[in-house]
Length: 309
Ligand code: NAP
Ligand code: GLV
Image (tube, rainbow, N blue to C red; front, side, top):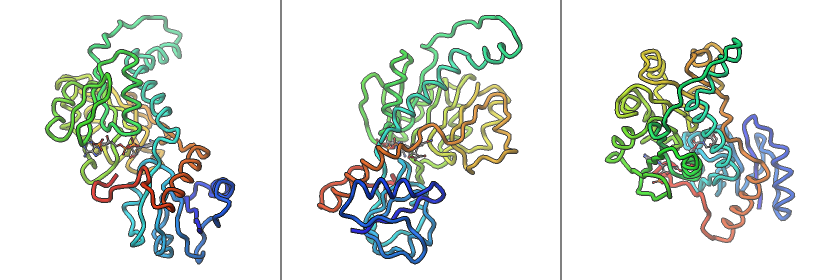
């Protein structure tokens, strides 16, 4: 079995070494133009030229949860796409979202600003009952985030494509449940995959439904930049319809240094850092998936091409 590794500019060497150690019976090498035909590829945002040169690939093992960058490409005819399932990302996502939520709810950003000025003063406590936290996407990451938020006694809501049940979470699904979900949500957390159905789902009319249509909604976007119609955000913040946003992902990454999101007082920006791929855990998971694939057994995280995730 031959495995090729193509990780755009992420640095393939440690991945090649880890895969070689875990799969001693396989030939593993970093891809370079003209390389021998491989059976499987371990990839992140590969160029089209790579796929065009590797028409015999049967498995494309993505080193992230989101496969939107892969699905934009022309794929080898037999290739199945397999994504990472959690692999150490859900706990990071839970940390990130709880941090952003609590920083906003307890107004720690305001205390930080006060501290810079040497100002001593309390802010009025807010009622957590008034801060419904709505998680869009209840998959490997969204479910963990929703359960973590529930530990802080916020009302937690979840929205998915099909009906889901999660302890401690009021679940909604599909178009029919979207309006009620948004209305009961004050802090919106996005953990959807980017598909044709979800592109641009966070836009002016969505955001204006938060918090029962009253001002005070807050956005935490940790999925993909293209879920948000970015030009809708700043006007809603400037009119005080929205209280703020924490954004980890952007339509164009890296976010241009001149982009107004960086300096807007109500926006917190991080550089797509909410949940990083853990190399050791990911290699262990991918090796298990490759072995299952080769034995003809079901492989967890196989992407359904029709759904797009
Ligand atoms: P997942 O396990 O595939 O879960 C996706 C969830 O979204 C499922 O609950 C699914 O509903 C729901 N969904 C899909 N399409 C929908 C639609 N049209 N309407 C309503 N709900 C819909 O994905 P995951 O592993 O949790 O990852 C989610 C996303 O997070 C990834 O795709 C990636 O874009 C992003 N991500 C970001 C980072 C970062 O560092 N910022 C890191 C990792 C991942 P069903 O349950 O009904 O199928
Ligand atoms: C990161 O964004 C991922 O999809 O894993």
